[in-house]
Length: 314
Image 1 (tube, rainbow, N blue to C red):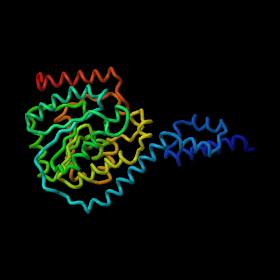
Image 2: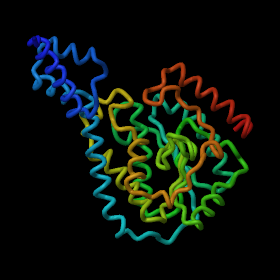
Image 3: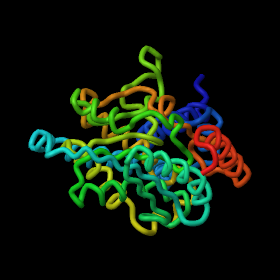
Image 4: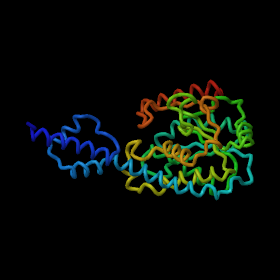
């Protein structure tokens, strides 16, 4: 004889699993989650409403909207003038907030400025928050700085460098390297997270802590424009205010990767180990969260030691 109670419990558990798949696109974390929801007697509507109010659901919705923005922009790529009159100038860009991360920028900037002076490269830095509220929102500054450089008509290369990174080879000519890339019709120099041949390798899976982009190339300008649009229009000021965790707003490295992938610009990219070849970076231990104060001090010390080894006393 069928146990009617067990039958309905199983049906409810199945419905919980279906709700997770339809709203979050995944199975519940565990069987316990399924059973707990069933035991509490929540209606499927209640469960769906709870899932729709979750940060995960809101984040996934933003990701979907972001991809739609990128896809719309991609449709215009064929109409873009591919090149403008190219400048040989290079600008190195760094940024941080003006309180917490400015301390680490103070260390890196003196060494990177020294490199730029030696190699006749323009250097630009900004301390503050272009968009957002909290110190870690300064990560978005690079997007707004790049947009400003695009809008003023610059058509050379921009090399972005995280506040926790310094040039590791003082004799390397960045200008000559970027000039050679442009001659090969390569308009971005990127750092790949994985190596070709590794199971996890995707050409667009890059670390955006250091990269170079050629603003004489129209598609590169459009990449900056859509990156800017995502963080200008996708989130309200209230959402930025509520975003106290690093991952409350779509990581701008993830959005950059999505733009590269959807725009399908691999042929124009020089992909390798840019950071290994040219930069040293004192990375935080947890990539999806803010560094504790003790770790921030440790990273500053590592940068200072490496800077003195490469440049001497600045």
